[in-house]
Length: 168
Ligand code: HEM
Image (cartoon, rainbow, N blue to C red; front, side):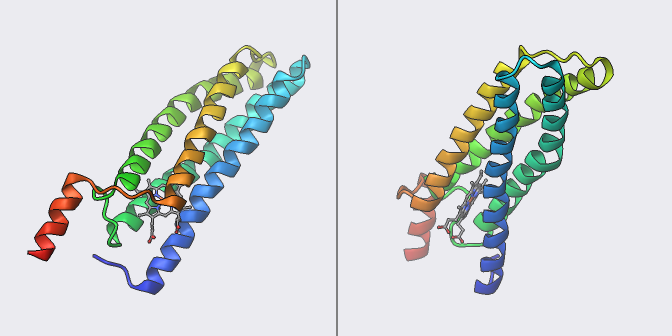
């Protein structure tokens, strides 16, 4: 079902807000990781894990899921479709993979945050993994933004068949 122009503008506004908000929330998470890695102070490391858990579950995860959901709406509600253009297919795959890694990593963050709350001695060692997760995630998200704005040409075989069926 194709959206009306007004509805499309509204849905696109929501989609961009959630998706770019996701990037902003990851940057906030990264700031905490770097500040913990730069200090020897156990209190700051504990505070970082606890705050990272909050930002993760209450900002990053909801924004990521909303980005995927609104992306699906943008694809299926416009002429773009979900499987016709490579830039959209790649965005879809990268977004799903990023969400899977995010949800797995949040298990670690929640565990470390509970250690920090209960014992006050969460490990600094795990922060290096977080640097890789959040830094890698940010790079993936930047690639997705570039794909979204440049929309490189390239139609999938499915998209070509759809086009041919229309012209015949
Ligand atoms: C991190 C994830 C994502 C980011 C950062 C992102 C970002 C963006 C941005 C900035 C635009 C606006 C481009 C423009 O109007 O020139 C856009 C449009 C669009 N996005 Fe996403 N997106 C993400 C995920 C997805 C997903 C998962 C899908 C669907 C599979 C999707 C489908 C679309 C479609 C179809 C448009 C074009 C809408 C239109 O022109 O009507 N996006 N996206």
